[in-house]
Each structure stands twice: as C-alpha cells, then as structure tokens.
Length: 551
Image (cartoon, rainbow, N blue to C red; front, side):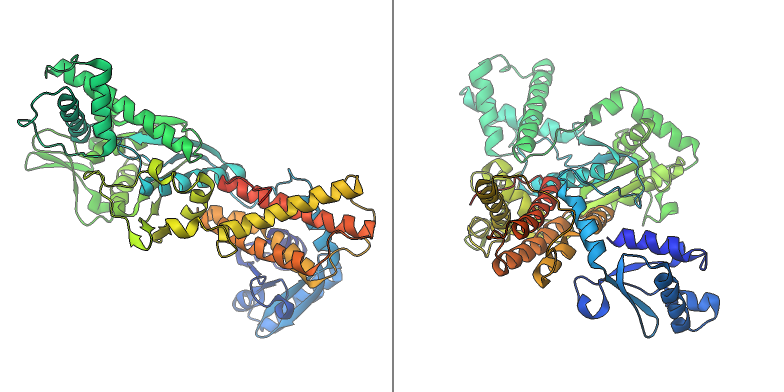
C-alpha cells in the first residue's frame, strides 16, 4: 500500500514539484495511532520549504488542493497538520480493491521499487572439521531465508558454500581421525600426537573406518595419509549436506574448494593482478598488501616469509573467481568475529577495480539453555551442541522460527524447554493456532455451504468493523514488510510481522461470528479469512516453515 501511495503522489504532484522523487518519503502510521494521523503521512512540505523559500504550511495546503482536485479514490481524507505534515486517511474503496488482490493465493506484488541483481550469496561455509553445531544453524537458516527473499522479489541468486580445505586444519582433522582409527584397530597410540578435534562424530568415524577398511591404512605413509584425508573430507562434507537438508536448507548451487583455487592457478593469478596494481610490497621477506590505503589499521601479509600463503590470499582469489562468473553483487554472511576481515577483502577488490560490489552481513552468537543453564560449547573439545542433537529436542519448523526470532546481529538465547511449550505464550504456536483456525473455518464453510467462495459484484457489509479494518490494514503492509526485510536482509522482520498478523486475526476471530445464518455475510467473512491464510502462507513459505492446519 505504501508504494501505491508513493507512486500515486509522484504522478499527481510531479508537474508542480519536479524534484518530488528525491524528497518524497511516505511514512507508515499503522503501528501508531492512525485514527488520529491517518494510515500514512508525508513531510514533503518541510523538505521543500527551503528550496522553494516558502512556508511549509502554504506548500502543504497547495499539495492538499492538488490531491483533492485529482479526486483520487485512494483517500477518504487528506489532512494538513502543523508544522507541515500531510496525513492520508485511506478510503473504503481503496482498502477493498487492494486487499482483494490477495484473494488469489498466487498474487505477488511486483516490487518495482527494488533494484534487481545477479547475486552470489555465500553462507554457512563452516570448516568441515566435524558436524555443524547450533551456531552454524543460525547462519544457515538466516542465509536460506535471505536467499528466498532475494529471489522472491526478482533477483537472480546463486548460493555458495566455500570449503576451507586448504592448510593445517584438514591435516589436523585427519590426524585426529587417524588416532581414533588406529585406536579402534587396537594399535598403541601413546606415541601419537594428541588429537586437536575430539568430537564424538570424529571418534565414531575413526571407528567406522576400522570396521570398513580394516588395516588398509594402518601403515602411516604419505599415500595412505592422503587417502585418509580425502575420505575424511568427503565424509564430513556429506554429513554437512545431510544436516543442512534436515533443517530445510535449499541445496547449494556451488561448493567451492579452497584447495582448487591453488591448484588451478587462481591464487597465483590473483597475486599477479595485485602486484600489477602496485598495491603490494616486499618487507622482511614477506609480500604485503597496502590495505591501510583502504582504511585498514595496518597492512596485511599475503605471502609469509617461509613462502606460505595467508588465508586472505585464497579468499581474494575466490572473490575474483566469483566476479568472473558475471555476478554484479557479492553478499557474504559471516560470524560477527570476522568484522575486521571485511576491510581486507574489500580493499583487494577495490585495488583491482571492483568497488562497491561486496556486501557483508554478520551473525551473532547463539546460546542454548537447558532448564535455565547455558550449554557450554567447544568444537575442538567435542562439547558443541550439534544441529543433529538439537533436532532430537526441537523439530525443524520450531528451530527455524526461533533462530530468526531476533535480529541477526543480536545475541540469541534459545531455551529448549520453553520453545517446546505448546501454549498461547509460545509465539510459534500462537501464530500456528491462527493458521489452524483459518483452516478449520474454511473446512466448516465448505462442509455447510457446499459452495465455492465467490467475490460478489457488490459487497453487503465488507470491512465495516474496527477489527476487520485493523486486520486488513496489517495485511496490506505485506509488500512493505517484505521490502524492508530484504533491504536490511533481516528475516526477523517476517517473524515479527507474523506475530502482528496472528494477534490481529485472533482479535477479529474472537470478536466476530464468521460463519452464521446469513450466507452473503458469511461469504464476505470467509473471503477475509482466505486472504489472511494466503498472506500468512506466503510469509511462512519465505521462512521455510510448514503451516499447521490442525492443532
């Protein structure tokens, strides 16, 4: 509704105010007291007063007259208020016309006001050194919903999981697996290096290898270790894919191996390009990048004194590789502890002529509570709460809902016992109860009326009560909520919107006899119920949450 008003005002007012596109902002009053100030307002007169050197109230009254002269059916009333606001009260006709669009369950706004891009979206990208834990679940679920939002409004999006399989961590993982493999064979492991990874899944995999392959890799040499390393990496990547599927994460379009960036010359080509840009220098036997020229607190090493590469090199090469595929926007979803790293990657891209192409979002920590006590987690110590273990207590729909119940940059606490409580105090079940009610009403309607829902040529008593109007006005915020959630890449806005809709629907349901003896009135009521169902289902679909039809 907001964008309809915005576009209408530009069309009406631009002949008299040529700069209106730059200055016009439509303000949503629906969360406030819209009965006093109208559903929407503008402060355009205040913005134009300096340019036009005219009193804002004079400008406001001029705008008011232009709109009223146009006799646009959108507004019941256009009101000027000091010191230069214009308030818009929506007409019954416009409310009815706009809300009926959602009677078609496939109706979707065009989102013409949003720019569409070809996007590479990288998320999760957890080190394949064990099972995914609950922190990874937050990244995965927020990322998955963000991708759904990006695609929903018309972007072309390709998802990427960047596999950190180059360097010591995979060697350390293989050493740990080998330790438990040798131990399972009954071999003396007292001379072996203490495993750096001690998760139950690593111990189990070492034992599984012993059962499956016997003593095939017992002799420790380069060939056997390499085979063990490949099997270990493949195993845990497959486990990661299974876990992501278990929480309803859409399959990744690309799995990019860090190792292949080195073996395919992408790293050497990236280093050469940076050298040719004159943004590198030699110092103390190492190759440095001039990231301070981009605002970093110090320059960063690319190639160490011993000839080894820093992690940054592979990341730079991967981002250049992404751009070679034709993406015009790169978005990464990282843990909050990576904040300083963003500047280095952006500096590298800028030095190569790619400015403003990379955007980075951040995820904060997740704490799990069990009976009020924090569950302590350490991946290396093997005490992390894995997603697989979490799913034994919380089913995927519930987990997805609560994972995005707070802004992604806020720390999140999930109390296992509280989120499972099936009562009206639990926002997930309260929201699902509204969905179940709509389904029950529709089932009852079709059973008693034995007819399809019809849109009448003329409504008898549609949208007359305050509770109906409140529900409709909340439903008509759909396009604005989706737009804001996308622009901020913030899925928690969808959860908050569902809470508002559920409250509004329950209030309407409790105050109104929806199915009664008057067939025409009942049909009109059921139209609104169906519209609520359609909108709620679209939001739930974006969240990747199943709609409960019975409770």
